[in-house]
Amino acid sequence: MMNMIVIKTNNEQYKEFLEKYAPDIEYIMRGLARHYKFRPPKNIIFRPMRKIGSQHFIRCVWANAGWSHGAGYYISLDMESNMPLSRSRILDTIAHEAAHIAEVLTTNECTHGKRWQELYGTAKEILKAQ
Image 1 (cartoon, rainbow, N blue to C red):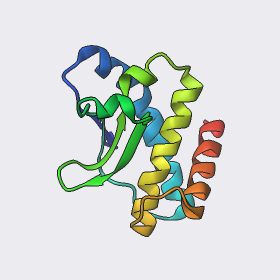
Image 2 (image 1 turned 45 degrees about the vertical axis):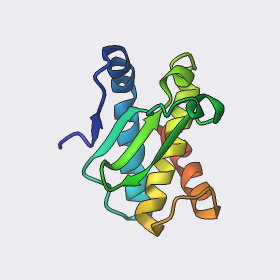
Image 3 (image 1 turned 180 degrees about the vertical axis):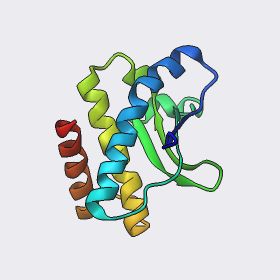
Image 4 (image 1 turned 120 degrees about the horizontal axis):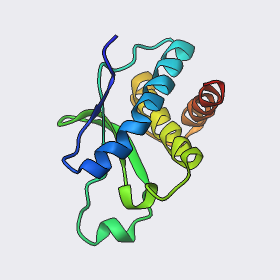
């Protein structure tokens, strides 16, 4: 089975950090796909969040996920915010973002609504069973 997660960064320190969590994203996504009976994406880009001038530091965004024409499915982490955190906090962030991708795949929406909350709860349960 090919790896679903594709790391995209030229920064070696970031690459090493992201590689530690790539198997967890794949585990969550495959578990969500089994549970909710959808086909997981062939690839999910896992990358540092792009900085957009000073807005990056004003907004309180730790990560984001979704789908774009340029990247396909992706999860982006704000590296400066996430790298100092505990593994359990980072896994919680990853479960949150994986739930967004699952929501896009199952409803074509990306919200924090009822469906997303259900997916996020299931993603956390999948992690506990790991």
